[in-house]
Amino acid sequence: MTYGSNIFQGVSTNYCKLYVPEGKVEDYQFTAPWSDFLNILEEGGGGGTTPVYGDVDGDGVVTAGDITVIYNILLGNKKDEAHNE
Image (cartoon, rainbow, N blue to C red):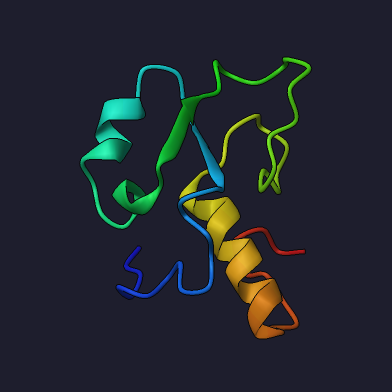
């Protein structure tokens, strides 16, 4: 999946927290556009009590699939083809 360089335009990447899968923080810190986030935190596989904002599918982590759903919602697309909802 390819995203434009402005995928996070309007998102405060200085203040938003990006939760990533356990052991993957460095991967995201050094990969654009994720590296724009100052707060990249390890989620630990979900199931915890800490809410993961942006986790649309409820698996405990924010992934590209979640971002796609949110992006489609913001664009006003009627159907989310990634999740068929």
